[in-house]
Amino acid sequence: MAIFAAMSDEEVESIMRANAERYGAVYTNMSATTVRKQVAETRARGYAFIPGTLAPGFRGIAVPLLQEGGNPIAAIVLVSTPARLSDARRAALGDRMQKLGKEVMNSARVLSDDSTDESLFHQAD
Image (cartoon, rainbow, N blue to C red; front, side, top):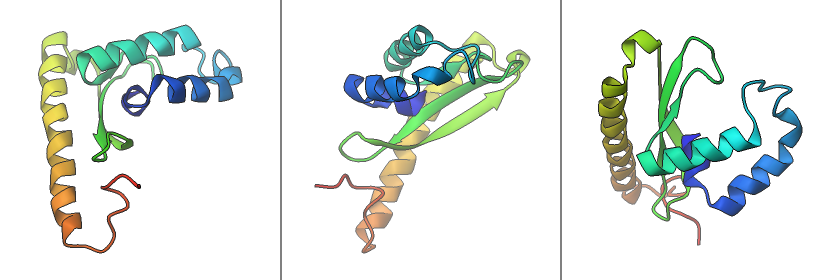
């Protein structure tokens, strides 16, 4: 969801159309409406929170790793039980993970400046 929310609305809708038959079949707790709602909430919050929708009994927090141009290339994900991921702890961890994601990509960019392969860290022209 973190990667999805970092994409443009057009990209999100295109991917959702391409996977429409999976909603309700493979992902029984998900629908296009649910995905759109979670994308909007993720964008507003700054990190994704998955409350056991995909894996019952577990909660997840995720943040995207973004190239210089803002394109997502990966995500950092934390999965835990509800008992260990209260609302207050979730908010604190979500904020910390956002900072960590930026630190990871900033460090990667510095390292890539010394490398000949910049494809992962710099957006293609």
